[in-house]
Structure formats: structure tokens, C-alpha cells
Length: 335
Image (cartoon, rainbow, N blue to C red; front, side, top):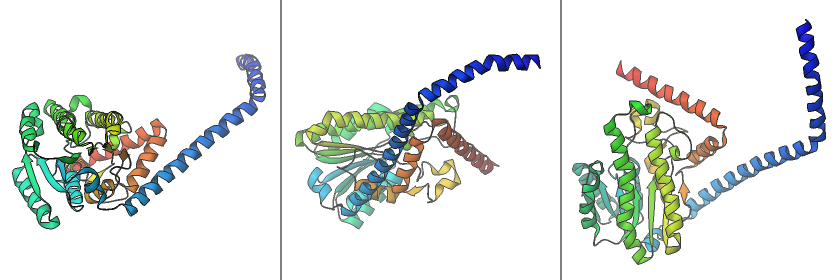
């Protein structure tokens, strides 16, 4: 009891001093609280404004705009499936001729013929495997030397099939992520940008990910590659926007594609969290020339806003739960 009394005696002056200081600074603390609350309210209003602007942009977008502003030809990498294929089809619906780049000749031929037949535009394709590194780019340069590329969509990318810690990722997959996600995008920009600068017009869309906007443990290397793309896009914009080149980063959340579907059965179908590739391309294409970064959908814009606004610990808790669910789903499939 004496020990408790001694502790109370020792802490009482400290408590009294804190109370005095609080009373002295109560008005300042109230002001800071009001400023913080105002900041959060303004951020929310700004987010709502951006969402409304995004919606109006899509509604008012003219189909003649892209071709007139940037040119008659678009190059799309990773164009036989998912977001890349959806971008190629959407751009073709604007009357833009399409050059598809991917590694599967049979799929390239099929998608090329389908776009030509459906939209009545010229199509061609280049069969390359970006994972082979530097050796593939002379062939691409040769194939594009007489083409005035107006729009480049860097969509080719690879990811993990399930959540993994950095040391668990196979070396082959690490190099594949570097070669396809990082090197291929950088080199494609390097190949087409001189022609765009000469014509003083062009648009480059780099398909990044929400992983570039928030922390993504257990997808660390993939997320780092997408962060690189987002940063590359932003820096390129500041270098070339004044020269007539528009450069945009697409940062979607989960899209039901062949790349992410193996992660979890939940990601194989549309939901309030997962969009379809065609929907993403439809909305994203209509922001070309208007916004430097887009998520490609309303639901993803809301998800990104929440993910970047939540306290980091809360976001990480939610993400770790999602990774656990993905790992559990994979384990159940393997039984």
C-alpha cells in the first residue's frame, strides 16, 4: 500500500502539470484539431470532385478525338489477353490501326484477325518474348521503322501466382518481372518516343497497378516493378509534356484477367472489388490526354482513395488478411 501511495504522490505533480499545460494550450489544440478535420473534409471533397470529373469526361468523350490528336497507329504490348487485348479493341473502335505485340503467334493471329474483321481497321503483329531481354528489340525497331506510332500502350507484365515472401520467389520469376515489367516498358518508350517528338504529338500509357500506390507485402518484387513504372511515367510527363507528348499511368486494382485469376477463385469473376478488362479499358481510354493517372474504373478509384487514406497499419492488416485468404484458397485447390 505504501508503494502505491508513493507512486500516486510522485505522479500527482506530473498529472497536475499536464493538466495546466493542457488548459493553457486548449485553444491551440482545438485549432489544430479543426485544421486536421478541415483537411480531411477537403480531401474527401476533392476526391468526390475527381470522381465526378472522371464520370463527365467519359460521358462527353468524342470518338474522333484520339485519332485526330495522336495519329492513326497504336502499339499495344501484351495484347492477346486481358487489359492489353481490351485496350487494342477499344482503340480500334475509335478507328485507330493496331499493332499487337506478344509472344504467342497463334493468339496474335487470332486477335489481329478478329479486330480487323470487327472494327475494319488495319492490324499487324510482332511476335516477341520480352523475357529474352535486349535481343528482341532490334526486331521491334525494324518492324516499327516506317510506322508513325501515335499511341503506345505498355501492358505486358507478369506477377506471382500466389502471395510469396521475397526469398520464396524463384530466380527465374524475378528476372522475368525485371525483363517484362521494367526493361520492356522502358525500351518500348525509348523506341517510339523519338518519332513522337519529331511529329510533336503522341501518347504513352504505362499499365502499372494499385501496388504502385500502397505497400504490397508478399508481392514485393511485383509491386516494386509497378512503382518503377508509375514513377517513370510521372518523370517522363515532366520531361515531355511541353513537347506535345501525353504520358499516363494506369493504376487499377484487381481486374479479372489470366494473370491474377490463379491467385484466388474470388478474383476470377466480376464483383464490387474486381472489374472486367473490357470495362477498365473502356473508361481508361476515355481519359487519354486528360489525366496523368487513372484507375480505369469508379470502384477502383474509391478503393485506391480508401487504401491511401486509411492508417498504414489498418491497410496492412486488411491486405495481410487478403493474402492469407489467397494462400488458403490455393492450398484447398492443391488437395
